[in-house]
Amino acid sequence: MLNPPDFVPVITGYLPAIGFAAGSIAVTATVLPATRYIRADKDVRRSIRRAYVIRRGWASLATMSGLTVTKEPSQLSMAASQLGEKQQQPKARKIYPAIKTRPDRFGFTVTARTLPKVGLTQWQAAEEDLRNGWRVERVKITQPKPGLVAVRAFMREPLEAVVHSGLVDQTGKLHVKPGSLRANSEILLGHTEDGEPVTINLATGSHGAIQGVTRSGKSNTANTIFAHAALMPDVRMVIVDPNLGSVAPWWRTAHTVSASSSPEEACTVLEELRAEMERRQGIFWAARTDKLVDFTPEMPLILLAVDEVSNFTNWPDRKLADRFRMLLQAVTSQGHKFGIRVWLLGQKLEANVLNTATRTNLTSRICHRVDTVEDYLHMFPDGRHLEVTAAERSMPEGVGIASVPGLVTPSRMRSVYLPAEHCWAIADAIVEVSGEVRPLPAPKLTLAKEAALRAA
Ligand SMILES: Nc1ncnc2c1ncn2[C@@H]1O[C@H](COP(=O)(O)OP(=O)(O)OP(=O)(O)O)[C@@H](O)[C@H]1O
Ligand SMILES: [Mg+2]
Picture 1 (cartoon, rainbow, N blue to C red):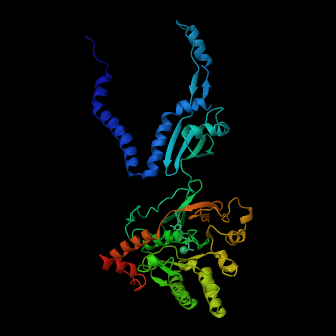
Picture 2 (picture 1 turned 45 degrees about the horizontal axis):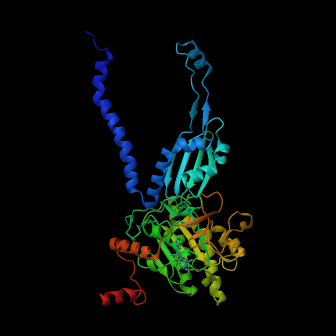
Picture 3 (picture 1 turned 45 degrees about the vertical axis):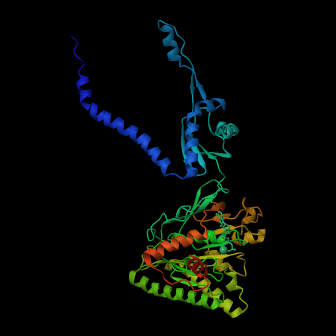
């Protein structure tokens, strides 16, 4: 009788462990992608499905688009086969670039290893075949590092796709708990035309400006910043808005609001901020520091937003207008180190609205559609040399040119969509948890609500 080899009992001993490991790998390999699919929204799911189809059909598409290499048998294997009994000729082997796919809401990115004679140039030459084979609108082929090629495939153009803000679902239900964000949480403003996220960070970022003609999407973009700020307990919101365009949803939650069109009230708000700067200066002495970097509910970051700045700077009473400009300049030029971030909004932020001293401090800039190149140049003085412009009649609502920390050059961006109804829903959720700072001014803003109540 033959004895089993010695190693069999050893392996048999490990069988349960091996089985468990193999089972875990199989479960992870199935459960993880399934969970990712279930949790994804409609657009990402479409990309996940397409990426799966692409991986399955890759061998055939790679062959047809000339992205394979043929590996001839080595001299050694030829010689070995001749010495062997069957004298069978070894065959040439076809090699495909191994690919990985990463789906996202606009499509997917395929990354592949390069092969000898199948590098960036060959991938670029195959662009049309890839676009047709994968049924995508556009592909962008780059080489992130030697030995690797990345193909970004767009099923939807990022500048055309409406992407809802991640704060709420499409019915306006809040995804984020009030008070759960922090001043240094990233704020997703939108996506570039290549689908890259455009974010700002209040704590580490600069002052900013948002410009654009009426209905170009300024308030939507500003509301994305305000909505995040409203959910941050270490941020204090101060909104000056002569048109009630931006401030209305945040009326009950912001620390300070001003809806007066005369510069007097706006000047009072700015003076209060200067007083706060002085108070903080005193604290700096005590703490032996010269800059605020960590924010707390007791020492919050102050977000000052002024909508329609030109209303104040071009006020008929020149003295009042000048006082406003002087105060605004003081807060913008010295406020940053005291934890103040200023965001100014306007249809045209031209020289008589913002003087150079104030403007140079507003380094984050977003320019939605404007009428003339001159208007665009107010925000981007070197705009004539840039590839992108905001002086384009066809530019849709929500699209603009953005220049924020993290973007190498000013880029086209479509802002995430956050309609006013959703801002109201976010404010409702905050009020439910923390109560309201002030009631809505009756009866103007509550008219619709009362009518609805009476009708009910
Ligand atoms: N990213 C976006 N995606 C889809 N629609 C958008 C987007 N941004 C804005 N819109 C829509 O465009 C319209 C105008 O937007 P918004 O009110 O923000 O413009 P505005 O520049 O503030 O105008 P105004 O100067 O009149 O205050 C709104 O109906 C808004 O829903
Ligand atoms: Mg507006």
